[in-house]
Structure formats: C-alpha cells, structure tokens
Length: 449
Image (tube, rainbow, N blue to C red; front, side, top):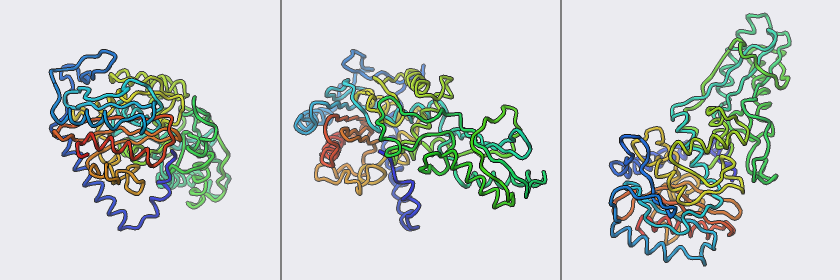
C-alpha cells in the first residue's frame, strides 16, 4: 500500500510532533526492556543463527520443551485460527526467540503472498549488506564543458531538498568564479544507477502510480512525481538561479564521466533512519530503492532480475530463505513466503548479538500495536476487546493487498520470554474485521487474550 505519511507528517502541529516523539521514545524503551537479556542465542563460534525447526525436518537446538504459557497459547491459537475466520489460505507460526524453537504452526511452511511483510526481508538484507550507519552519497560533477553540471544519483531514497540546496550554493560559487553568472549553464541528471523504471513480475499496471511512484536513481524528499530525477534537476536549476546563476536551465539526462571533477557532494540519512521509516509507514519507494541498492552492492545489478538474485544470495548468507520473491516492497502478486520463513527473519532480527539489525527490534522502525505507524489506533488496529490488551506490548510489520492481510513481529509471552510470530492470510478481502482478527491472534501470543 502506498503511504501518504510523507505528505501528512509535515502538517502536524508542534505539540503533535512532541507527542509522537514521546510515544516513540516510550515504545522504544519498552521494546528494549522486552529484549534485554532474553535473546542473543546465536552460535558463538560461527555467528550464525541457531536453526529453527520446521516440518521440513530441521532440528531443534537444545532441549527446550515449552512452558505452560506456551501450551496455553498453542491451544488458544489452534482454537482461534479457524477456517471460518481466515479461510483456507492461511499460514501461521510462533517461535520462542531464546531457544529458536517452533512453538506453534498451522500450515507454517505454506508459501503465500506476504504483501508488505516482505519489507522485513528488504530491511534485513540492506542492514546486513550495508550496516545501519551507511550513508549514500549524491554528487554534482562537471559535465562535458565548463558550463555544464551533472547531478549524479546514488539511489539514495533519503536525498532531501536541503541537501540539494546546499550543493547548489557550493556549485554556484564555482560557476561564478568561472564567470558564468549570466551565461547559460546546463544542468543534467545521471540516474542510471537504476534502470529505466518497469513493472516487476507480479505487479499490476495500476500499481504505478497508484501504489508506488516509478523508482529512479534520484528523488528528493520522497516526492510523488512521474519523473523524480527530472524533478531533482529542475529543483537544482531553480536553486542555482536563486544563488545568482540566472541563466541556468535543465537539459535532461546524460552520463557523468567516471573521472569528472566533483564540484559538491552530500551524504543522506543513515540507513537505519531510512529503514525505520520504511517499516513504520510501509513506504514502497524506499523498499524498492533498497532492494535495488543491495543488487548494486552484491554485483548482480539493479535490474529486477539482478536485485532478485542479490536478495536470494543475501538471505542465504543469513541462513534464511523465501519461496519466491520478485520485489522489495511486497506489491508483487507472484511473491511467496511462508509464515515460518517470515518468523525466521524476525527471529534473527531480535537477536541482540546482531547490532546491525537493531531496527528490526526497535519501536523506531517496527510499528507498536495500537500506537504507531501502520498499527496505530487510528488505523483501527489493536482496539477490539480481544486485542487491545496487547496495545503497547507488541511490535510488528503489517502487510495488506486487496486480498492479503499479514502481520509479523515480536512480543513477550505470558512466560516472560520473547516470541516472534507471523500470520499470513490470502484469498479473503482485506477488511478491517480480517485485520482485527489477525490482531487477535497476535494478542493471543502475548497471552493477554
């Protein structure tokens, strides 16, 4: 689902922003307390996660036999995860994070459309490849003549107008020294870090622009534009004019020479900040940018095929898997992943011995039940009699298409142990009732219902 938060957030009053910050801080503290001392069970010798059992025959680690709370939860989930509520295309799984033991499963290895819970895979891969402190750099370089400049995109989804404005100020000084304040100056963009936008396998033609803006190598402020790179070029032209280069004009695309002189450069936000936003508001454009950037980093390329190859490669390197994924956002109707596979992604993410994955266990990124992001009460999540007891006690990524509802995250069970879970429903209209029924299953994992 395309998010509109990037438009509405800027309209909030100062008091609303302060309230939101307080809520986020409290939720982050709660999530940190929840995880403290309860995870980190990775194999100390290899750094790899202990395997999670599944019906495919992978074994348990240790002799964890389950707690009485586990048995109560299992019985309740079995009673509540009915065909009448969820249909026949349902996959669910719950894992005890400390032992990596599969506590409960119903069709847990059945691969279904994950919708935006696929962003958990994208986040895990990007954080694994780049680390949370990674910042992508946008440059402005000399063109083929002294009166030409090229904005060279890195694919950074966090590029801001403020960054472009600062670079325009620097470049305008260089151009003024060249005596070009009133002479024509040509501004170009180089955005071929990503290929010309096309539909991923499984995307409906209506998804662009209804659900996602065409993803290009340059975008400022995550603006909705049919050509975000051209928007960057025109904005930079206008800022040059504001800085005294009065005859600057935008002239389209060109390739920056590898040896071109760098006139200005700017680093975007830390990857953790970008991932947090992607998860919290389910931003499709950020997801696809990160999906493609992983392909660039792994050398397979930023085409859909190249990005998909890198996605599978990095998943495998983490000891994870998916049945079939074709994008990074979960829009593809060809995507397939099981609840057990999704839960394993979260299980790895909550392992506190993996500092690079902290956004996957943080309330700064993962929506808090009944409080923030796509799980806020205003979205009618965790507000029913059955689920409101879990508000503020559970963190999860949502997924929704017209006929898909999914939820995957973590909470603390009644036994005080961290549990990770995934519930995926296909083939039923994604009504509020269906989403609230899934919330009910998640509340069951906490043991509060």
